[in-house]
Length: 336
Image (tube, rainbow, N blue to C red; front, top):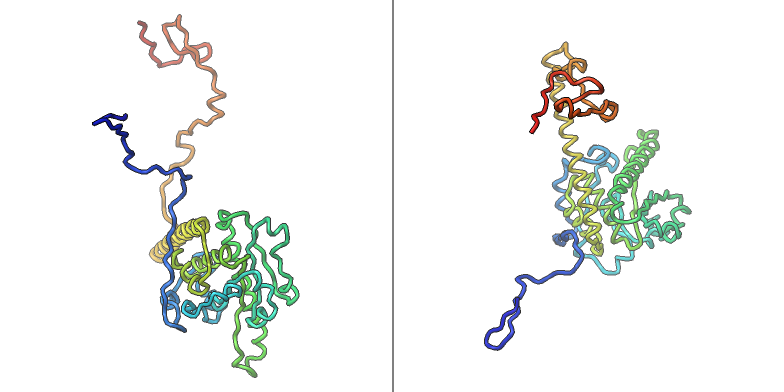
């Protein structure tokens, strides 16, 4: 309500400024990666010697198929703006870049790429705008992950991780089958793991989020650290809030999987201890469960609708009627 004082009209002011924008989730702030000297391993690699996988396979799998070479070097100081048009090595077996890198025949051959993984929008896939032909001409398998938007990335992450791990395992088995006949004559044959190029249109959005999700799952690292690791190797990545929230949701799913796996391991360990203490038992917990026949069965919906309608006869002093006969043991209502 306005008031007049000293000939001036005074209008009360709002204590806080109004905001007319559409309600949105809070923004996720990711600090820039820490600058370290050149040719130095990333801190997360040094701390992850005993890392554990939380997605599809164990940590020993990744150590085996990469022949122990799962470290990465910092690339922040020598980054150049022109490098956004090419692909960069995020991990020794994972590369990130734009679609132009997937069409560069010399680059694919020079870096020993053995699989190309494209993460595309469904409309782009239908228009065949993100389908390079060079990998097929070189005999390199091409895997396409099509999504409609960032929310569908959450379901696409496990499928893409499974495809990458399956290819690494296949390349490892193929390499071992070729090396085994020549172990005596060529004992120093180099072990080269499979190498995968992950790309989207620019190599800065969906493909970067997918590579961050792989690091989160296989190295047990949180979302912020995974994004920093990818950005330290390819400084031009740009993830909006929708991609960050998709990674945040995937991080919650991974945390739930860790809890379930930990609980299952504890139950298995307790079962093994009980079996060792009681060799004659099966190791299962002895629980006293009341037999189903002795427990009172609860009524279901069919019982309620099949039951005869309960009628109240006012002339019989309010005694409840079940069909034609009064119910036994029920007291009549008090009449006023």
